[in-house]
Image 1 (cartoon, helix red, strand yellow):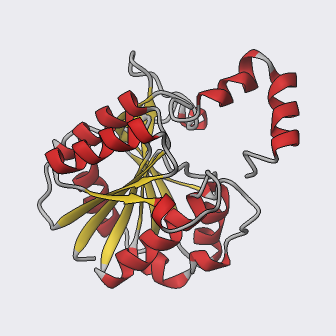
Image 2 (image 1 turned 180 degrees about the horizontal axis):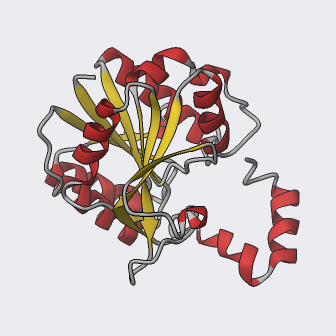
Image 3 (image 1 turned 60 degrees about the vertical axis):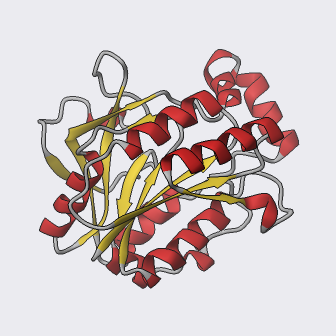
Length: 238
């Protein structure tokens, strides 16, 4: 792997998104990197603010409305486009979602740790709340010693690096187009292809669960309404 290709899928939630962008922009890299933000049908006002941020911080902004008419979420398309670019550039692919704040050394450290593990397919930074406590989606890591451990549980795409060997081994064109999110499948396919997945508890990143998709909070505050809306709108398929 010669490079890190960082991506952030975005739909509105502009204030959190801008914080994510600023944190990535402040990252320290020792290898070449590129950063692409995929705007998944945000409002015209938020699209304008993303365009301003792209000029200020120098990242590539891809407005998916210029590519597809498929309604949001378009996570599958984002993964497919990013995979193609990463393979072309011989890069690792690092996903940082728009409700996550990385530290200056997070992304380079994930890259370095991946290189140390010859069987690595995916490696993720553990997520924490404002008090530094591990939170969703890595509650299963509570009680683990600080460091790196292999896991067969799914890795979320909150802040996760996919290695170039894995990207070459499994085409995202094979992912189920009827699903909204693909972290579970991508995690399992990594294992099926003979790789190991790692969670790094010594590289915590601040995560505001579902900050980029606030309607998902209904799952906890009003589960009956959440599952009803999920059913009638056919959304949030994992």
